[in-house]
Amino acid sequence: MSYTEPMLKPDALKGKTVIVTGGGTGLGKSMSRYFLTLGANVIICSRKADVLQRAADELQNETGGKVLAHPCDVRHYTEVEKMLQAALQTFGAVDVLINNAAGNFISPTERLSPKAFDVIVDIVLRGSYNCTLALGKHWIAQKQTNKVVLNMVTTYAWTGSAYVVPSACAKAGVLALTRSLAVEWAKYGIRMNAIAPGPFPTKGAWDRLVPGPFRERYDLAKQVPLRRVGEHQELCNLAAYLISDYAAYINGEVVTIDGGEWLQGAGEFNLFDDVTPAEWDMIEKMVRSAKSE
Ligand code: HXC
Ligand code: NAP
Image (cartoon, rainbow, N blue to C red; front, top):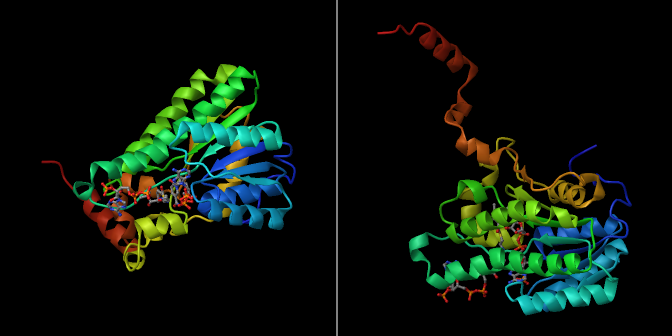
């Protein structure tokens, strides 16, 4: 058994219909593929129609599942409503929303224009809000229960991070949205959770965050205590579990899947990680012999 293997029973999502925003690339595409193998119908949306359709064809051929590719810019509420209508026309109902679409790039904040902040916050925070609002209004009006929203955040949603300030602000907002609506909408039978991934290589993220030679210079695996980056399947396993009925009592939670990365930076004495056993002997001797003044 390995963390690179699918975890859930083959029919764990049978009969469920899942919207994955940004589902044509990266982690969204990987999650979509796994949900399809577990019996779900999937709607993928993003701005680039050609990328979406290619992904939908590939996923359908691979899994035999049903995929609707619907171009939609999540920044615009009217487009989100149209996407929901298309999903309802095709599949009759929607059970799960994954707010996965994102924009990000690495840059010193003082180099940013005001619009650079807007574009990231609009995709990540406003986009998640728009999709959640459209689905929530629909589910509540129709009195449909056992519905789930799963938001993709990051660990710097609570620590903050230099050089990705618009993304950090937006993801912090999405985390607040998650925790707020987990309480407010529980009475309607809607669960709301988040996943905070550490580094999981994707073209979209790596090209914008560790481009070119910086990929080697700043090997992200080195700052993970487990000394590796994430495998898409282990994140897919977690996401599938959280949207499945097995997770019916999990609400308002953010599950970190980062090999211990953010805590590595947080602990006061974590920099002692490279002390050798011989050096620990030396340290112990010195500390034991310390006398109070
Ligand atoms: C400074 C930049 C910039 C850069 C864009 N801008 N790139 N500023 N440094 N590298 C500025 C532009 O100058 C412009 O402002 C404004 O941002 C909007 O840029 P556009 O190119 O017009 O926007 P658009 O075409 O809508 O593209 C959006 C995008 C792009 C976010 C900039 O990168 C994109 O499409 N991204 C989608 C996918 C993505 O980002 N995936 C990564 C997710 S990774 P002005 O004022 O000049 O007009 C992630 C992981 C987190 O979230 C954790 C990892 C461990
Ligand atoms: P990715 O492949 O670049 O995915 C982002 C997707 O969002 C793209 O498919 C993009 O498609 C879509 N998108 C962007 N703007 C949009 C808009 N306005 N409307 C609709 N769709 C839009 O990146 P990823 O690495 O898989 O990231 C997926 C999620 O995981 C993100 O939420 C990210 O913050 C989170 N995450 C990733 C990592 C990691 O290490 N990879 C770590 C922590 C968190 P279009 O360009 O076609 O619109």
